[in-house]
Image (tube, rainbow, N blue to C red; front, side, top):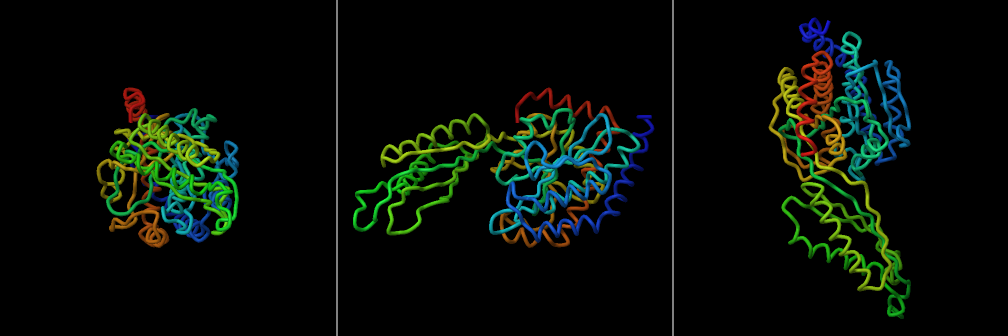
Length: 397
């Protein structure tokens, strides 16, 4: 049976193409609907419902509110092993909307799940689409991991839209968000400022402390920040100020070191100004691991679709898929939706994410991931190599 399926793999892959073509217009319409209704992380009520409902209408078993996250879902088709998970994301960005093309990213993985059904029907196994919210805020996949959502999953797959050349993999860095609040004392800023304690001064001093730390940071480390509350009126000494710092570092050891120093900067500002500091660490995001066997499969299938691929990309960005890749074999690949290499998280990306090239990326990405799933499900020796490589590399990125 296994031998026959392996020999007939090309027939299965042709069926995958037919499945995606069958749902092409519906997938594009769904992507455009999500694009026209951008929702921030953990607020993706419409997108998660539309994606989950579409899968349910097509014979997937769908669990909403997955892992206690209202806009997360888990949709499964088939039974038994191996279990291949498609990792969908669908949150937007403030102001620019879908400037990271998550309308394509979410719909692409739903399409991949649908396209893998003929493989599961004939060869067994299970395909799962996991809807993970708030990818831009970092952390929902960590929450899912901590709650056992990936137990029993053999391989996780993701193909992210991008501009320009499409790397076969990415070396994501480690990351951490830090929310900060300072509390002081209100007073009139003109008639009695000495009676107050400026929380804003404390936050600005903390920012300056962090900026002074930059020359001590390792190459590849990034710290950015925003002020979310700088006071209510210019003639009032602010009794409250708040901000968010985000750290990116090559690995978790460097991340921990920078985070400790950053907290020292925050504490120093509080002592100097006589304010009270409160800070909250977000979930720690691990650097990503690549799997060369999964990369080989993706490369071969992309080339079969007439697409070119680039080598593994080193990135200064972070994503909670990094934590998934440290827990089980994971493909973090990319598919191009424009020949021009434009910076992401921009309005230019938002415009391209609803265009024809983006729709082509959606279709080819769905086909490509489903083909990788077919390779894994029908060829036990392929899955064995994937797992052997993962085990041999331990926890190294």
